[in-house]
Amino acid sequence: MIYAIAHFFHQAVVQGIPLLFGSTGEIITEKSGNLNLGIPGIMYMGGISGIIGAFFYEMYGNTENAFLCVLVPLICSLVGSALMGFIYSLLTITLRANQNVTGLALTTFGIGVGNFFGGSLPKLLGQSSGTISLITTGNYFKTTLPFAESLGSFGEAFLNYGFLAYVAIVIALVASFVLSKTRVGLNLRSVGESPATADAAGINVTLYKYMATIIGSAIAGLGGLYFVMDYTGGAWTNGGFGDRGWLAIALVIFAIWKPKSSILGSILFGGLFILPVQFSGLSAAATELIKMLPYAVTIIVLVLISVRKKRENQPPESLGLPYFREER
Image: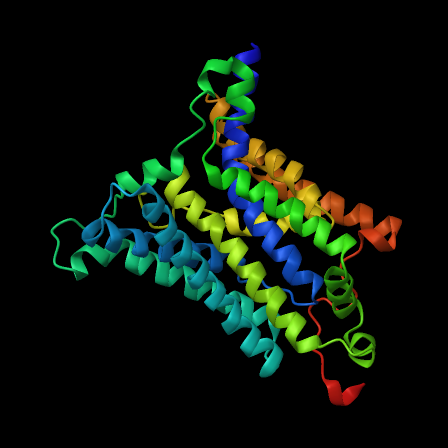
């Protein structure tokens, strides 16, 4: 019984890690006042960029070098997803495009690029197989602590993960500390609450918005890399991400814009995500109702924080609103 609970917890964490990356990145972005609905596409871009980097390295590099097998797709993922964040920033901050439309366009673009290259990259390079399966690189990402299995249920629940799972938790904790305890975090929150006031105080609003969006996008992209390298073991499947990107955005609200709260929230959402699998005898209707639970819980949380109106639990005051310095 204890091992079954530990195994379920393990699976919930595995499912929740992509959501944790995505929600942490989006929280950082939203703290600057930018509402980036392109997170699903950015996660796709992070995943496919990592896959492409690993594909070429396995083709031409030394696959016995575990460090480079991990580093190359990691850098490619960060660059690809950060580029998406830069495009979003350029359109919404500099060119003042509508944030909602831009984010949705990036989602469509990212999913399209991911599915195109993920389904045709080997054929474009003259190979007979049309599928991408990077078993060597995937195994490096999936490598767990060598003593985890010997610790029974405790090892299964807390130690039996690839390194990116721990990176996700560390990033969330660091982001929470920076946002709440440092001057940079205070400035960023000031930009999100009232950019005109922050600007008048000498804070470079444009710089903070750009950096928060680009860094947030890079972090979200790691969620895509985790999914394709750790969860699927280096294999790409078109549409395999499902609605994880949207769940990550929902998790931002559930965590009331606090990165450390998204750690537990991601595990809860991950558990709800796999609940239908654990109860295989459920009807199709019951399965769909369970899949709906994360969104229902998010709506309930949104209603509660709206009713209570505690300022610390509210989204940034200028979230989704463009800033025109001339209108100060």
